Length: 226
Image (cartoon, rainbow, N blue to C red; front, side):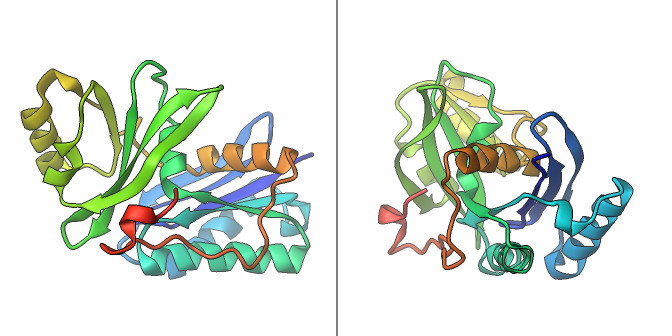
C-alpha cells in the first residue's frame, strides 16, 4: 500500500497528514507559535501510533519547499530529508503556494494564493486551471497588502493567510472583482500536499536530497519560481 507522510511547516500554520490513495488516515493542522521544532515530531509519532503504523511502512514523503518563514521551511525540509535518508524512500518538495491553490474548487476564475511573509509583508502567486490542474502564471511576488491588489484586472479568488485588515482592503479596493475564500477553504492542508506528491511520484519525479528551499527577498521576488 502506498503510504505518504506529508509535513508542512512553511509558515505559522503547520500541518501533518498520513495519506493513502484511498483515504486520509490522519491529519492535523494547527496555528503554531514558532514551536514547530517541539511540536512536529510528537505529532507525527502520535499519528503513526494511533493508526498502528511504524515509519518503515511509509513509502513516500512530502514537504513544502517555500516560500515561507526561514526557520519554518528549514524545519520541515530537514525532518523529511532525514526520514528519506534513514528509510530509503523518495521525497517530494512542493512549492508552498501550490498547496494553497490545489485546495480551491473554483475552475472559472484565476486564483491568487497568499502567504504571510513577516514584517507586514505578504507573498503571492497567481494560478489558472489548465489541463486538469492549477498552473502558476507569472512569478511569485512579495510586497504590502496594497501591492497585492494593484494589478488585479479581473474577478479573482484570494485564498490563504488573510486576516480581517487584508480582507477589508481587498474588498474595498476591488469590490465585486474580489472573491475571498472562506477560512476552511483557504487552509493549507498536508493532505493536499500529499496528493500533489503522490502524482509526482507516479511520474517518477521524486526530488534529490540536495533540493534547496525557496526563500524570497525584495530583490529576489521578481524571479523566484513557485
